[in-house]
Image (cartoon, rainbow, N blue to C red; front, side):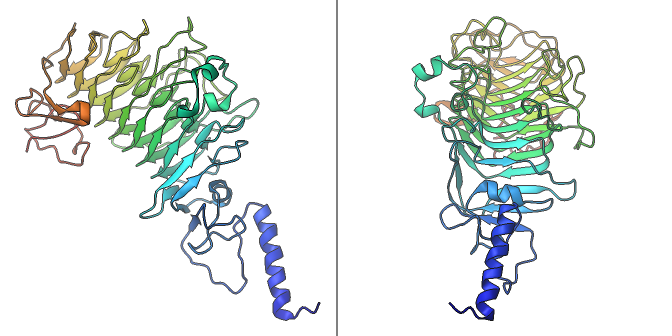
Length: 458
């Protein structure tokens, strides 16, 4: 067969494309094609190919991990609608490349698109999105679905911690690693505008990390089958990282999230004794580092120094506590609404819609907490509580401007957690530490601040 100059050029281009693709670098399909200057990769699970260059929406990659292997600081990965998974030997998306302070890496839903990550069953699928020791990375606009609805109680009963499909997190911020692989402390990570549900372990699990923002996510029906005692949103052993960002005095932000239906059905294997302790809506766990260390950079007895802001969240119908701090310091819990949590029958979950057990330097202000199952809505843990509204059969303590009484929320059973007319939450909050806007983006006017996550007064 005769090959002319143009045909030879095309063959060389294809060969170069295959070689670069195998090396995990961006590729070109034609030497004559002019690629855009914008640092964007595109991913389309239906129309893409991992031999494409990925630089335009007409030549997208097919898989998320292909883009993750090519991405560099300052680049954005735009992901089209579709369902993204793996063969079960790896996570659907593992990010192991960091951005820089002025050149973040962003994985985001393309405008008008709704990408779905389905975690498969398989020995290597421990998370939908695995952020492995990285920094300056944003995750924006994904839906991640776990295997909860396919797992039977009989399967879960033999969980010994080694089965990925029984212990996977929707999103895992990993400063721990495995075996002799020790990642650096992850820091400056944003997880926002995502829907994270039905994962056997946490919705978002953050281990040995710093400067993490979790904003405007919906996180539900997680942690049912794991033996690791996870929750909807969980921070374990926050760890100082050199160079991490402080904003307005805070390192970590948990703001504007909805967290519900998270619970533990299986005992925490390493508990003393093994029992159900968690399945909380939100937990900040042992920033004092009193418990066993995880990974090379987590040191027992060396407490975390950063401050965490937990605000504007609605947390309801969880098996564990609503917002739970345990052996943690430097946390402000402000203008949240928690409703009908502690649904577990565990004897270790008997008090605290919002609590700060064995914690110090904690401010709990402007919250609305409702308990419907006769457990202690709060208790005296020695921290600063003020301007909260406690609604429950058992309110053993209240402080300062706290109110014990009916919250009169509009229709919480059907998702409307706004205070209704006559609620003592209206216009009775303080501006101290209060976020400027509420969960829905409504401004909080000075002198008319409502307690809870939703502002009604003008």
